[in-house]
Amino acid sequence: MTRVLGIETSCDETSAAVLDGAGDDVALRSLVILSQDVHRVFGGVVPEIASRAHLTSIVPVVRRALDDAGATLADVDAVAVTHAPGLVGALLVGVSYAKALAFAADLPLVAVHHMEGHLFATALDAPEAVPPFTALLVSGGHTLLLDVPAWGDYRLLGATRDDAAGEAFDKVAKLLGLPYPGGRHVEALAERGDPLAVRFSRPMVRRDQAPGDADYYDVSFSGLKTAVLQAVRAGGGDAAPDDLKANIARGFQDALVDTLVEKTFRAAREHGRRRVVLGGGVACNRALARAMRTRLADLGATVHAPSPRLATDNAAMIARAGLFRFERGERADLGANAHAALPIPGLR
Ligand code: KG4
Ligand code: ZN
Image 1 (cartoon, protein in one colour):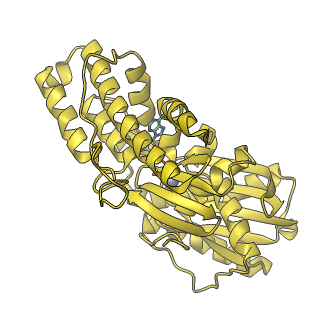
Image 2 (tube, rainbow, N blue to C red):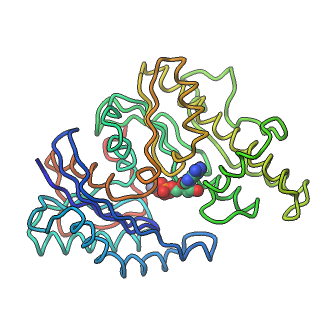
Image 3 (cartoon, rainbow, N blue to C red):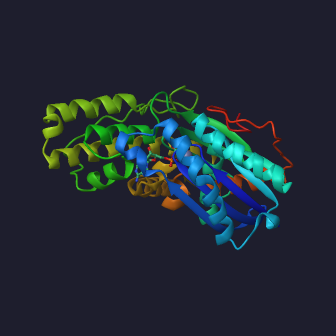
């Protein structure tokens, strides 16, 4: 059994977690997530403010995670920290702090890729959400469709050609006058919308696409965003009536969800997978999970979506991915750095 302390500071959540485990048999002992509310005022994450906020909260957040687990540093076997991708200044706070902890307590350090963390998050809720599976990672910065025959072996099938799914939600939220981050507000508004009132075309989805085509698995959301902008303007912009805004939100969400479901269905079918794992903040979207379950049932495939707490950024998933890397013998040294962009390890 290995006890891992996980640390996550890649964006606007300061998070720490303690996890015990061996292989896929793990138990989460504690999870502390401190969300930086301040960015709401600016309608988006301000990198410099994020770094400073991480600096003030990292020590109490880690201490609290250890306390909640009834542990001290002496009981920890390894420190896992997100080193990429993300805001470099924000990542650096976690990386520097983790290096200092590892050095002071003489503990091994493991560097974790944030998106690999999202891949592991669902397995913390559902022990059967383990490879082989088809994975759809949908966050504020990434949209990745992967085939996962085994942990650490990631085959990239498709990605977004422009905006990430979460980014599209956030931009549409802004157009509709909703707060940041906008995903859950768009979802709530869409629930009141009429599904037949406003229809947007499904981007990058055509019947004549074949598995070898470059656009068979890729998605694109910038055209959809522009279509939403035009619909809002035509309806009176900010002054558009609430029911029209709800109908537009519904039309947008349906188009985005349909696209993601179709691409994921294709991936699971072509690779003969019976499990689909969703990850990233947009995996909180209940309409997405519902539509995914209905469609994938045609293949006899089960869909696993993480609970909201584990879908959005958190250190539990970093500790979980860190345990996997630790067991493979991977170690980071004190020269470890933060990287704004880096491919997921094991991606082919
Ligand atoms: O994974 P995450 O917490 O952070 C990144 O690594 O980016 O994802 C945040 C994204 C935001 O764009 C947010 O609007 C979106 O996830 N999101 C949602 C929902 N909850 C969060 N999008 C759609 N529906 C939701 N319920
Ligand atoms: Zn994330």
